[in-house]
Every structure is written in C-alpha cells, then in structure tokens.
Image 1 (cartoon, helix red, strand yellow):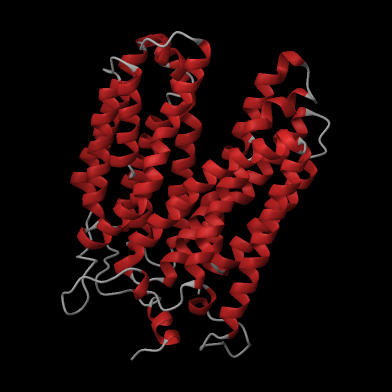
Image 2: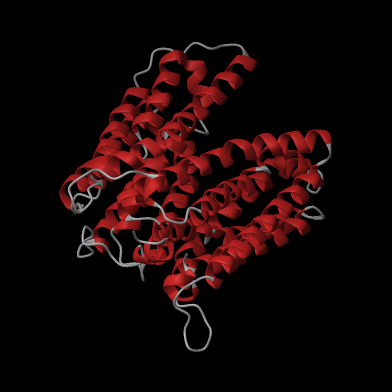
Length: 430
C-alpha cells in the first residue's frame, strides 16, 4: 500500500488524465465567462430596490427587506451547491458543468426581466445560485488543466476577471437602466451570458474523463487524499479572505461619516468599497506568478500577515483618503490569496477529487461573505467600530501563523530536500 508521503508526492506528477495543450484558450474563455456572469449577478445592486417597488412592494421597510432577501438568495444556494457541482465535475467532466452554468444563467437572467411579482424574483435568484457557478467551475477547470508551473499565474488572471466583474457590475447596473429600462437590462445580460455559453461549447477543450481510476471505477472524495491538512487550511484561509473583505461593509458609511464632510460621505464610502477590489485586480496575476516561483503557501502566509497589519492603521484614520489608500493596499495583498488557495488545493489532492475540494473552497468563501458582515455589524454595534478592524486583523494574523506552522511542519517531513537544505518545489506546496 502506498504510504502517505508517496501518495502526497504523487499528486505533483501530472496525471495521464490531464491535457495541457489547450490551457491558454480555455483560460481566455473562462476569464470572459466568469467576468460576464459575475457582472450579471451584481449589476442589479443599484436598481434592485426600484425593481422590487415596480413588482408591487410599496412600504419602504418592505422594499429594503425584500431587496436584501433577493440579493442574498443567489449566494445562499450557490454556497450549498458548490461542492455538488464540483463533485459532478470530477465525475462527468469540467466542460459540461460550465455549459450547464452558462446556459442556466442566460435563461435565469432573462426570466428575471419578465418577473411579475417579488416572489418570482426571489425564486429566480435562488435558481441563479442553484444553476449558476460558472466562476467556481472555471476555477476547477483552470486549476486542473493548466501546467502546474503556470497554475498560480493562470488562477491569478482568472481571479482578476472575477473581481473585475464585481467592480464593473454595479457600474453597468447604475448606467444601463436609465437608457433601456430595468427589464431590458436583464435581457441584455442574459444575451451576454448566452455568448459565454456559445464560447464554452465551441472553444473550451474538455479533458479526458477525470473521475475514473485505472480500473475504470469511480473514485471517492476525502478518502482519496492522503494528507488532508493542507486542504483544510485552505478552506479556512478562503473564508478568512472573504471575512476580511466584508467585515467592514456594515459600518463603512457610518465610519466614513466620522472623518469626512457630510456631503462627501456616500462618494468616499463608494471609493473605500471599490479600493480593495481594484487593488486585488491589479495584484492577482503578479502574485500568482510570484507564487509559481517561490511557493504558493509562502505567498499565502505573507498576504495574510500584510493584510492583518494593514487593518490596524485603518482604525486610526483621520481623513477619508487615508482609508481609501489603506484599503487599496490591503486589496493588493489579498489579491494573491484566491489563486494561491486554489493552487495549494490542486497540488495536494488527486485530479479525480480536485473539483469537489475546490467546490468546498467556494462554499467556505461564501461562508466568509455571510459571516463577515454579520460579525462586523455585531462587533461594531456592541463594542465599537475600531474593534471591527482590530478583530479582523487578529483573525488574519492568526491565519498567517496557522498556515506557517502547518506549512513548516509538512515541509520538515518532506522526503526530497535539496542539497542546500531548501525544500524542493514539490514539497513546498504540500
């Protein structure tokens, strides 16, 4: 029986079931598709309350409540189903999951423009999370069909496309409805995603069947992983990333109001919200490329530590521009986490279960998106707004220490140290 060290090391040898010939073309389609689907999911933010009112909800409090329910519904079902789609991708191929997600999103987004009441809108948002998942599916495909020495860079480029969608979506949602109307905006987004569907069908090259072992039998999930510690660490890290990004959201407007003129509050708050995303877009591909050279786990530890340190001065800002700059710098640091998290998972699990594990990673990130605002609002309301930054900083630094301890412990047991005493790249990612 293969021992754990041998099994773990074998994950770093490209399995026969993988083909890297078309990885660049696949990456282009995945970046475009992820960008368009994320834009579609977020473009409704500026006009959602107006659309809810058009659908018959008149009371102001009810409009706010239904808007929150409708927007959060997609992420709720997406978090629940991400591991399922990842598992099905392992069993039946990654391309079919991208086809399902793009076609499903194209239909659902178009139907949202035809809703007659708020219940139908919420139901369609739930279906969008259930049937969607193009971005997470793209992460699985890129992670498993890219040469491992380029994996970090490719996932960084993909991450930039995803975050660009988050940044551009609300901008489009704020400018397009006044020109063509809310319902036509939904139909236009559905048409754009349908182009993604066509590109996926005709241009994405599928891999050979990933979910079968040499005897033709379907493989398991966690049982296939010899050392589960790196995967568990990445699930925690992904959750911490989203928690750090979202913990400030409930208090940001009130916090900004303390340091800027009342007439500039909403403008500066918008800049603060966008600064971290912009920083991550700019740094993701660079940090992913750097991680391919120095080790993905090393970059994760550094990013967590830097982000944790940058959270502390945010609690003491006296000008709005200071908070914008600090959030931008924190975004630069956080931009390296998502591609490196996926890369470490990919380097430490067999290809047959990579989709399932990356699906769990997506769910962990959605959990951070939910827990972050809840925790930030609770701490800010009961203990003070500065404590939100201190608490988030402590979590990020604790995450860095946890990853460093685990990374060091695994590297010390690596079977292939170099003559100079350094750990070889294969061991470095474990």
